Amino acid sequence: MFPFWSHAIAPLLEVVRPATVLEIGSQHGETTQQVLAALPTAELHVIDPAPGFDVEAWQTRHGERFVFHRALSLDVLPSLPPVDLALVDGDHNWFTVSNELDVLRRTAASAGRPLPVLVLHDVCWPYGRRDGYYAPETVPAEHRQPFAYQGMVPGRSELVADGGTNGWIANAAHEGGPRNGVRTALEDFLADLPSEGPDVRCLVIEVLAGLAIVASDDQRTRRPDLDALLDRLADPRVRATIHDEGVAELRAIFGHPDDGTDGA
Image (tube, rainbow, N blue to C red; front, top):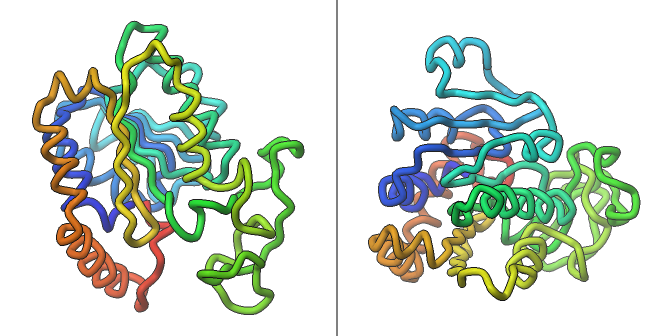
């Protein structure tokens, strides 16, 4: 998610000014650290079963406003308070993402709060239309696609035995179809929103691994600058800039133009 920071996520935090933020999936903490710096008074809940940084040191540094949950998202979310903004970048599969979004919606509704502003990574290739399972056993068998530990190639539905992207993850054997992938989970969630509820605007930035921003009418009415930001991010010239700068940043970190699916 971090290649989207300067052009999308940081301006979004500035417009929304959330008091409580949730991050699902922190990896090495690149985005976590930036959120803490950008919002020095906000409370940040972070969920990750296997963080790649020293959580205890960060808790000492940031105090009670940094709340870390070393667990699976669906085991933690029902007990969390409503949040103003959620960064969703955990397990990249339909079952997990669908349920994460639904719990966030129900928690907000129960508290009489608007749907939080939602930011979802990996809504384009390779996981937009294909499930990936970090730990397949954590997803009920009836909700798992057939999978293999093999890589993915753009434009090809089948996995490849040699090479490809992310062959160390359990990837769905085929791309597309119902209940398969992060983008599909988001679309199904939006289609299932109660008809009596507020309308939402969903913007998808289709560069790198893709980023989706979902904002309800309630959020946009409270924050008039939100629509202006989304309009700017919809500009093809801005998207091209995000792509070019993101690729350069990923090359600097990984040594090649990684697709960005595993950046926190």
